[in-house]
Length: 287
Length: 235
Image (cartoon, rainbow over all chains, first blue to last red):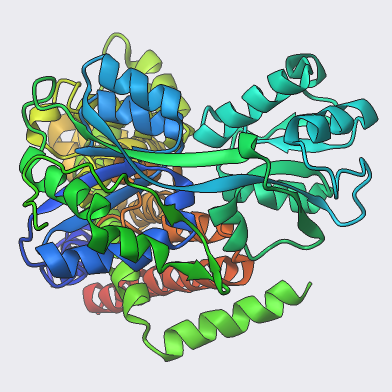
């Protein structure tokens, strides 16, 4: 027993590290999709990705982050596909030459959630902007994502529509969480505050405590999702062919049906809306 | 708080059922953090010892920097590694982003300063004790380094374990460079963060309990190994 203990320890660690390697995964083709937390946290991807995998043999690796972060990541070439929900950012992404083309895939809506007691009295109102104006007027606590996500951008647009200068109230009744949708809802639940949420995450959110969906249905709350292939001209390593197959599948009748069939507690979470007349390059025309 | 009761039963059910997703996540956590500890120890222990033994200009500055780096926020390390490994960054061509390798790199950067700084502390104390004796035997600092590393081995284990503790528990760095991709880069801490964001607090806490148990097991294993070895050395 002459060998040195640290050496034995390092040896043991090395052995453990090797033993802990999970069974080698088959070397499948894969693509990286930069998406938003809503598509992941709602459970949509868990529902549709196995179907796509079965149809194509392609593994989809999802990064569930905010829209702002997802766009920056895709601009750096760190993803093959951008799948988010902020149309102006998406169109700019394509116009700037980072993306090939934006395809409409599906939509859901935003809802204003808040405590059941509803101190601002917005339940029963139909206009989202009016409801926010009421919340601002009563200075009822409101938790914002504050993270440059698609939901955050929409919320800021709603405040502008309501004619409220929200930056002035930051830190008082208006709290910017700087967090994802789920974390923001956790804070709103704990503070009995209002928040803007996408309906997918909201339906699948389990820590509601006293929160309820108080207002939805206003057309201004329409929440469309688009999918874009990152342009090979900007980033030559992008897996264009595999990525396009994913997009083709998403907007195909098969993919659209898969999206429509995803329900949470009996409610359809996303509604497929790829125009039927769009035929992507590479997709065979079966009609 | 009913969440605590639910968390304990959730943790128990996950372990009892040998949940396959859970074992995958646990295996990846161990693989990443143990690999990082191994690499960081190989770098950090000699660096720490050298800082203790050798006198050179700028040494004090290095020691201060090393000590300060013990407290670097994981999310900053994650950001730096992301920028380095991004396709737009200098090492983008390697295609390492969002792989376990990227997570290991980030954790090595995170814990090497910690291991080196603790090792330096241990070695310096020992060196004060041994310096005269070793010098009188005509030993150079370079040769003394080996002697000290061996004599300080039990104290150095603590430095290594501290590194492991920081690695297995951090979420900021692995979240950014790993991306928390299901079945690819999802580890214990990123799973916990994900479940919290879904509002599944009991499940998140249950996973936390399993993480703590895992950490206790690793530390216990090292303790037992050390005991066995001690008995083997001193007859």
